[in-house]
Length: 199
Image 1: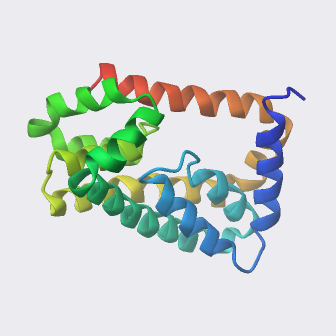
Image 2 (image 1 turned 180 degrees about the horizontal axis):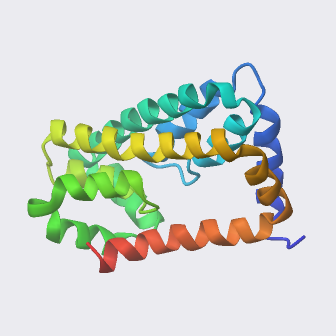
């Protein structure tokens, strides 16, 4: 196995093991919250094995992801609104997303709700959207509403697809883990590019 893929494979195996743990839902909430404001790993990494392990709880897991992610998004909004220079800008710099942030800034007055919705639904890095929303003072109710809709559609779609087609997807991930990793990082990089060129 490629050396760059091995740590991710271990993380995947660990999360598959934790998916059946009695406290797994709390870890799912923590990751979902943190990813919306600063953490690099998306909650899908944990949501997928958890739903595969317990398809009867797919809707619960999707609801936890959505609620915790929106709460984390509000934390990201607060960082942008109150602490952009101290915390928000360093996060933007860490992800090398300054140009992406400027692209969002240029269109926010007209398309703010849709930008938040798109960031919640797609591979576009949601943490940059949440921080930008606070820094650019998007209406908090509009932000929360767009986050609920975008994040909810994303996580419930993933959970329902896994509930329906779980075992084949699990086999595909395990047999083609290197390819899945490449696809994940391509989507992540593409998300940042989308902010720069498509917003």
